[in-house]
Length: 194
Image 1 (spheres, rainbow, N blue to C red):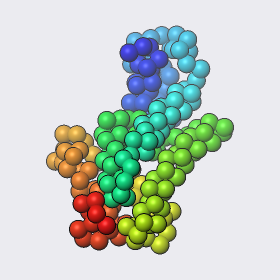
Image 2: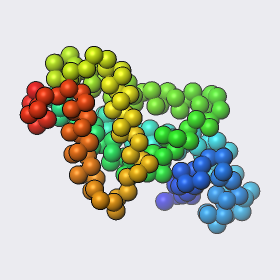
Image 3: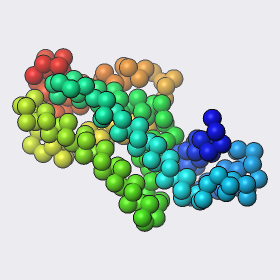
C-alpha cells in the first residue's frame, strides 16, 4: 500500500471513530509515524482527505449498482441489498464517513459530496421505479420508498459487526425479505417471481 493509501485508510478510521472535527492532523501524522509537516507532502488539507474518503465510499456503493444483474426486480433488489450491506461491512470506516462526516465539508466540496450521494440514491430509486412499472413492487411513491430502503440499509453501520450474531449473508437475506415486503412484494414473490 502506498503512502497516500495509508493516509486515506488511517484518516477514514480516525474520522469514523473520533469524528472529522475531533481528529487533528497531528494525530493523523502520529498514527502514520510521520512528522506533522511531512504529512503535507502527501496531501493538501484535512478537508481534502475527508472528500477523498467520501469519494472512495461512493465509488464502492456505485459499483454495487453497476454490477446489479439484469432481470426481474426482486433479484435486482436482493442483489442491491446484499451489495450495499457488503460495502458497509467491508468498508465500515469509509461507510461511516460517507453516512455521517461528509456534511462537515465546505462548498464546493460539499456540493461534490452531495452529488455523489444523490447519484447513488437516484440509482436505487431507478431499481424501485422499474419494479413498480413491472407491477412487482406495490408502492405509491418510489422516492419515498427509496428513502425508506436506504435509511434501513444505511443505519446498519451503527450496529453491525462482522463478529456479531448474524453473518453478513444472514443479515442480507433477512434485510432483503424485509425490504421486499416493504415494497409490497406478495408472499412467494421473494424467490424472484412476481
